[in-house]
Length: 230
Ligand code: NAD
Image (cartoon, rainbow, N blue to C red; front, side, top):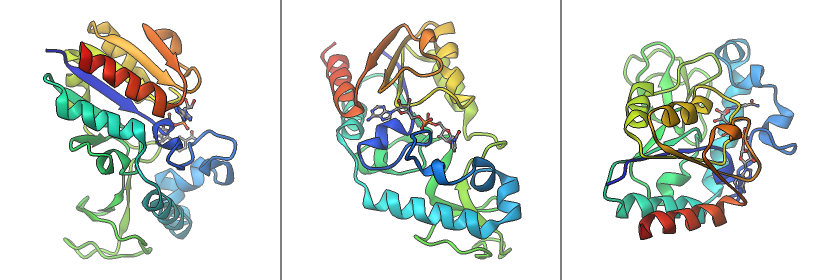
């Protein structure tokens, strides 16, 4: 039985109509990262940040999972060994595509978090600045998103899975943001076969044993079929 770790990035949701971060027409073209994706930006202008994630939540709700998301759900259902799906994406298209165990290492749009006590609850479609925490009542709700300078979630669990992995596949991620960009090196170190499925080579492409380039809706179902036939 093989153990598989899958890392996904913005590229897997691109064909669902959710813009990637670095594309020229991407979401980030009109916003500075420091303004909308750092704790300092939230401290300076919480309204701008809350609006930005409200827009992203609405965009994700309008989008639907594509063939790449559903292929990974089929793999989860049929695969006999361990499988960990780690996503950097904050949308819920993996879940809506049928995956039931998704680790959102950078947080999730559909979750809100209290900046005071860290309690989490389902985010409303439109969050407002100063929404009270349902647990401690402090008016410090924030989007449950891991911003630059904050620690991604469940790193221990991810590192354990990478140590045990026989196959590590990275899908639609540019390899610019650590620690996720370092997963390939760790997986290879522990002996996994490493595969990049991407539209264009990532910043860490040279570290993968195998690479396939094309749209995720083509490369991912093809790869999943191969794994299931093995
Ligand atoms: P990215 O936008 O950096 O990269 C997208 C990747 O998807 C690229 O490699 C691209 O070639 C590929 N791609 C595009 N269309 C594709 C398709 N149809 N099929 C397959 N691949 C396709 O996104 P990322 O790597 O997920 O970014 C990592 C993290 O960076 C994000 O989760 C986010 O937390 C963080 N982030 C970065 C910035 C920034 O630096 N501007 C801003 C905010 C957040």
